[in-house]
Figure 1: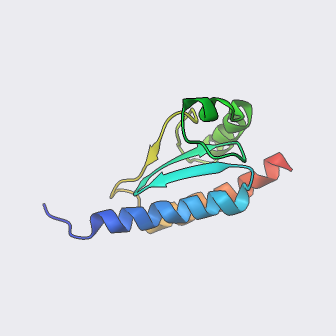
Figure 2: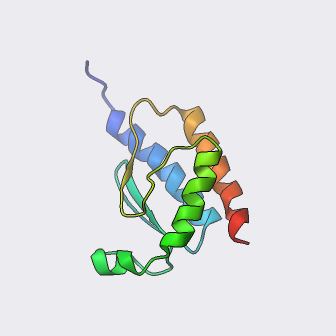
Length: 108
């Protein structure tokens, strides 16, 4: 079945999540390409394996478990990429953005 415009819509949804991450967790680095994105707990750009290794995996683990406890299933490692599908509805994105913003409190 054809779904014209699906990729721009997925990229827009990913952009909302990336924006929430960058605003709520300013000490993170988020790479995005279309509907794919990766989250790293570092202030420095992540451009290769070495810069990825320099990020804080402990903080990522704390973040992962917070999201999981609140019903958001995300990559268990910051070395994995996240991606969206047509199954992710606007309500899912908004709920996730809210929980990401709440997660900022665990690092205060």
